[in-house]
Length: 359
Image (cartoon, rainbow, N blue to C red):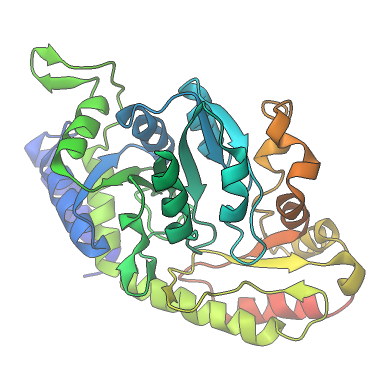
């Protein structure tokens, strides 16, 4: 059955049941099937990924300072701000664009309580090294895994790393519920606390156990997710082929650095980032961005600007550019090329022709 017809069937069932939200039948079904698909024990659905990030910090009772990366979407650091937590930025490493474990230890202070790392473009963080540091200093580890849906390293889901992992199901992600997100945890007690917190703190009809928030996923989102789940493997395969075509056509062009795919990592191919070295390529990243737009090709400078360069955060001592040279360079060079399941190969060829000619 085509996806639209599948979703229509679910819509009729929602209409007839009159159950729209509050842990309805599709919510329960989606939560179980998604956990099974991802290879995780416990998963709690959310209305969006930002609320999931905010709630994850509440669930672990994180406070004080948290070491994090500036190379992410701004929601990562905003979740700290909303919890009255001070972000401490450290630089990224140049291959995977993830937080550099070699720089974490020097940033730890008596006020540090956690590390919030980000899997970037589907590249997992160096999770073993991060966990070793966390264990040594008694820190919590939270992974913003918005880019890591379905990503495995050596056959194991990266969502099983750390204390909690947070997913986003925004419309721009490979797996979408239009808006949506989830927290992955490792034990039933933590899941129960998370479920309380996302529903105003209600433990039952008359008992509120904490200052929760309204972050529940509704039945329409859950139904949309169930439909997506039926087709996600096909989408990942399609995008993998398109990413391979990009790699084939763009390799060898001087001044363009293509993404590294670490050995043993199974990607979901949500993004295809390219770094533009202005000196070698002969044109800046921003000029490339505008030239692509002139052909109605819309790339994304992702992540630009750095979180640490936004007015809200640039006053922090850890935000000074000298502290973050790799992240600043990547932010000034990166452009993510169009990549989605129904993108035609001819369009990819056109993008590559534009990047290869006329500089």
